[in-house]
Structure formats: C-alpha cells, structure tokens
Length: 249
Image 1 (cartoon, rainbow, N blue to C red):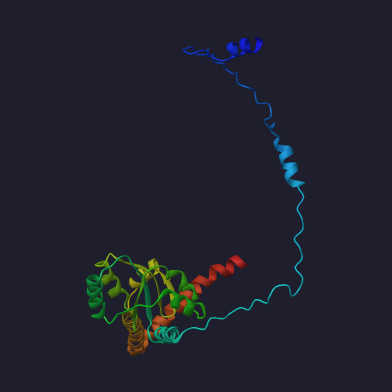
Image 2 (cartoon, rainbow, N blue to C red):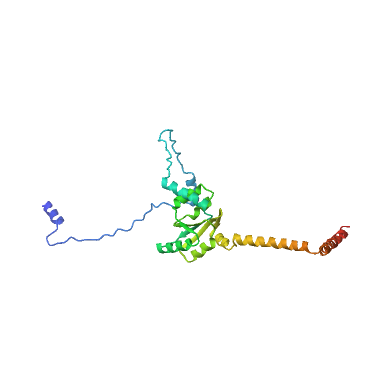
C-alpha cells in the first residue's frame, strides 16, 4: 500500500507536465589572476636567471667539415680574360644602369655611340665583381647592382657619350674609369667640360712662342735702346732698396 502511494506520487500522471523552474547561477569571481611584478623585480629575475653552460663537445665527436673550393668554369675564366684586356686596351670604361630599355632603344643607342667609336659591352655582375675584387679597380664593384651596361672607347670621348645618353633616358650613368682614374657621375660631367689635350698643347705652344718672340725682338733692337732699358731697371731697383736701408738704420 505504501509502495503504491509512493509510486503514484513520484511517477507523473498521464496528461500532466512537470513544473519547470529556471535556476540562474551567479557569476563566480576569479581570484587566481597573477599579480603584476614590479619592473625592477622583473629585471632582477632576468639578470639572476640561471643559464646552464653549453656542453663541451668532445674532440672527434663530429666529422671534420671540409671547405669545398668551387672552381670557376672555363666560360667565367674566358670572361675574366676579356675584362682584363678591356681595361688594358680602353682608356674609358663607363658604367650605366639599364632602366627597362627595350631592344629597339638599345639598337639606336648602339648606333649613335658607334659613330663616335664607343662600343657597348655586357658582362654578368657576378663575373664583374669577381674580377674587380682582385684588381686595382675594386672600388668600382658597388656600381654593378642590377642590370648594367659598359660603354668603352680607346680614347676618352666623354662629351660624345653624354650627348648620346641625353636622348636615352632609360640609361643612367653611374660612374666611369677614365685614364686609370675612377670618377663619379658628377665627376664625368666635370671632366667633359675640360678642354681637350690638343687645345691645351696649342695654348702652351702659343704662349711659349710669344715669350721667345718678345725676347728676340728686344735683342734685335738697337744696343743703345737696350742699354737705356737696363739703366732704367737698375734705377728702379736702387730706388726701391733705398727706403728699406733707411728703415733698417
């Protein structure tokens, strides 16, 4: 009887729904956050942190590392020989950067430079730097970055080269080696403003000829006139030395 009563109370009746009750749990406070450490204490901990020593590797534990020396190929050696001959035979070696120049522009530029006896050469930057590192032109190595072009001529024709490069904005002059002298781009422009050797030699010869002609004309004049000039020169020298002697006494 008692079991039946309990089952009747516990088991739900047909057509009856149990009473639902929503229970809301309150937020629990988290109290396990780490407290911030003072900056001085952090520095002290970092300084006093134990650093284990590196284990000493016993001799012979690892195989001996051999440094393999890469031999240069025959093509690279051939290019180096050409570069050596180029610097020996040509007095002007200019370096320019090729800024996206197409084949047609390069063909026109080659034609313009060829009329003045200037040739265009192409060499890989790796070969150029390898050659320059073992030569007296090692300071030119920083110029060979990116696509570069060489303008060479047996005689320094700087004005003609600059005139041809003005019509090719894709080419930017970086520097040059003229008569075994390294010049920057501004130095090349200044070099182009100098007179040629023939003009300087002509001016020197004309000056010397004028001086000798003047001396010869004086010697060919009447001896009396020459003696008068010498007496006048002696008087001028004596008049200049007299005040100095009085000041000294």
